[in-house]
Image 1 (cartoon, rainbow, N blue to C red):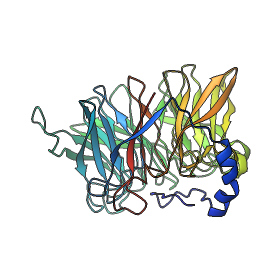
Image 2: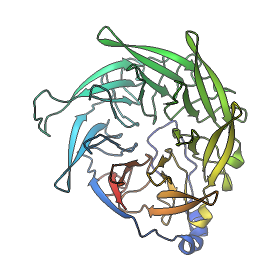
Image 3: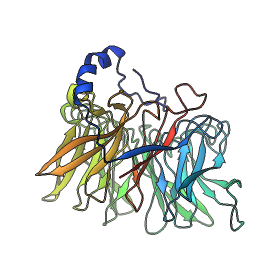
Length: 417
C-alpha cells in the first residue's frame, strides 16, 4: 500500500498490497500490544481547519501544543487544555503560494521573545523557494482564541541562499541567532545550512555551509542541533561515501564553518536519514534512517558515540516488517524520562499504516515494542513525539481520521501512561 507523501521531491519505498498480504500471518502472530499506554485522538482535522499535519507538535511551559498543517497551503494551530478538554485554535492560515509562504512541513518553535518561528516549503519570492516566518500573538490581553496572529516573513529564500526548507526544526543559539537547513539550493544546489542574525530591527541571512551532493552529503531534510561547545550536528539524506546519506558536524572555524562527515551510511545499517538527531545524557548522537537495513527498506535507529577524539557508529535497532514492527521512520527519536527511546514509523504495524514505538534499554541491548499501530484513527505519521511534564506523549498523523479529505485529513493524538 502507499502512503501520502507531501514533499514531491521525497520518495518513500512504497509497499505493494502483495507484500502486505505475504506478511499478514506473521503480523497477526507477532504484534503484541503494550496495554500500559492509552491512545486517543485529541483533534480530527476536517480540511476547513487544516489538512495533513506533516510535522509533530511542540509544547510550551504552560502545556500548550503548537503545530502546522501542510495541505491547502498550510496553517499554524494551537491546542490548549481547558478543564481536561482540548480546545483547538487556528492561529494563521496561509494562502496560495505567495510572499507569505505556503505549505509548512516543519514544526513551529517558540523563540526567546515568545513568538512562534517556522519555515514554509514553498512561497516567497520569484522562485517560490520557501520562507522563514515569525508569528506574533495579538496585542490584546487576555487574547481571544479567535484572533489571528500576525505573520512577518524574516527571510525569503532565493536559491543560492538555500531553497525548500523541509522537516527540520529551527534552533536558536544563546545569542538569539537562528539556524536551519534547506533541502536544495546553496552554492551547489544540494542543500545548505544557514544562519539568521538579528540586524537593525530585521534579520540578515548567511549560508554557513553548502552541500555538494557528493562525499560531503546532500539534501538535508532534518534540522541541526548544538553541542555545549557550539558545534552543529545534522544528517543529509543523500551523498556521502556510498551515496546513501551522512551524519555531519559543523565547527566554527575562523570567520566560517568547517564540515566533518562523521558517518556515511551503507545499506546494511540503514540508509537515507531524513529525521534530525538528538543527544542523550552521555553525549551520544542518536537518529533514524528511513530505509535500508533488513529487506533493504525497513530503516534503523543508530547511535554515534564519542571515542578517542572521534565517533564510533553502532546500530541500536533494525526495524523488521516480517515481525510486525513499524518500518520507515521519517522523524528522529525522543528520549523519555525513563531513559527509553520513543518515535513513530511511517509504515508497518498491524495495518501497515505506521506505529508509535519504544526502544527499551536493558542488559546492554535495546528491545523494540510497538505501543500503537495506526489505522482509522490517524495513519502514516511523519512527525516525531513530544512529552509534557507529566509524561504524556503527543504527535500527529498526516492522514486518517475524519473529514472529506482523501483518506482522512489527519489527527493530533495523545498517549497517556
